[in-house]
Image (cartoon, rainbow, N blue to C red; front, top):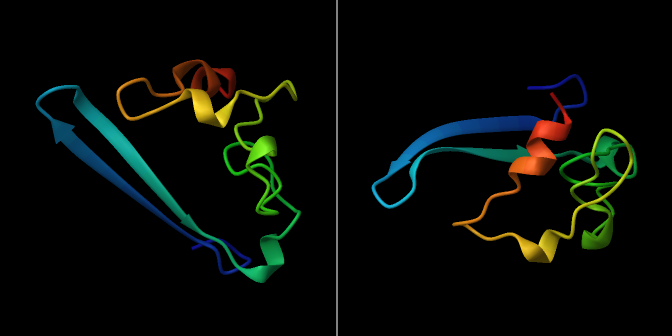
Length: 78
C-alpha cells in the first residue's frame, strides 16, 4: 500500500514453457492520475505514453507479448 492508497500486488509464477516470471498488478487511486511515469506512463488512459524508460524514451507497448517480455525496458530502470 502506497501513501496515496495505491495498492501494488506482486506475484511470482512458474510456466513450464518460459520458466519463472513475475507479475505486478497496480491498483491506483484518483490521486495518481497524471502523476506517474514508467510502466504505466502518465496513468491517463493513453497507452502511447506507457513503458517510459528512465531516460525518458518510450518502448512501443504493442510490440510486447507474453513470450517476449519488455526486458530492455525493465533493465533501463536498474
